[in-house]
Length: 345
Image 1 (spheres, rainbow, N blue to C red):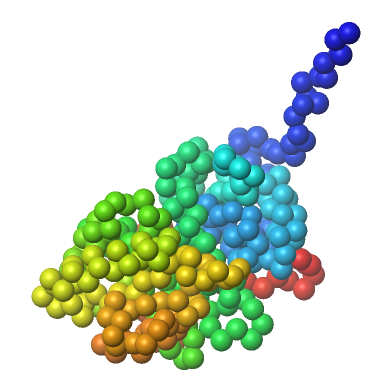
Image 2 (image 1 turned 90 degrees about the vertical axis):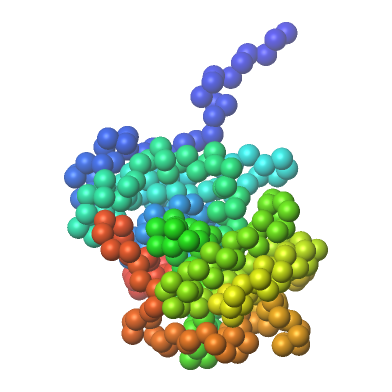
């Protein structure tokens, strides 16, 4: 006897009710959101606009006390169409949920800054299109690098914190005629602030010398701007790191002034514990290793590069790197705002 087939709707998981895209963009919906969005919700919208996609794990590490608290809030923001989500395919297990900015979140963000949504260069289909991008894993890797630094800075009595995190898109807008770094960051610790460009390598660029060819662009940028900015290279394995370091040393040695491009490298597999992806740990090896015994913490690198001018202690004083003006929003503060006392995590 053939069993009766269940109705098709019984085979689908529960999907939360959400307003249609047209409804999410109306004034009535945005007016209702005004009384519900916290400063942290708005900050998350700015972060998603800047960095395109963040996973549940990353969002929890960035701004919430636990993954459960993050999931509960993200579900509500998803229902309001402040954020949208997708889950990429993986060959084993299940990938975490990935979040992007949705229609209502983009509208609220634009109005917050006195702009029209079109000024943000935002399109919902383009935001979700990153789910099919061949660079999705690379983008998630870069964002994990900075997420770990934000999470370290949020710890009680943390000695340092991240003061700037610019996306690849913003870097391309500023420096794209010479270099296209994967990100730009600044770390403040012990009254000293270090800035750097990040080159995040997943081992997919073969040969290793291809990564080294970008160094001449950084030298040109330093010559043009008069600002020497270190370049940190993150690699997947120590074996890959060794081969890239050889190529980098050869390229830097061919420069008219090798001091224009201070370089440091590390690899993911260097540390075996749960903090293997923490960039602040003692894992960085300057290119000229003979000057320094062993590996250094992120905050110690400025001691090696004495010719790199120090940044102001407080970002409010100013910085040598200026965000572009115009329709694009200023870079968000990488550290989240505190939750109001009336709201619990």
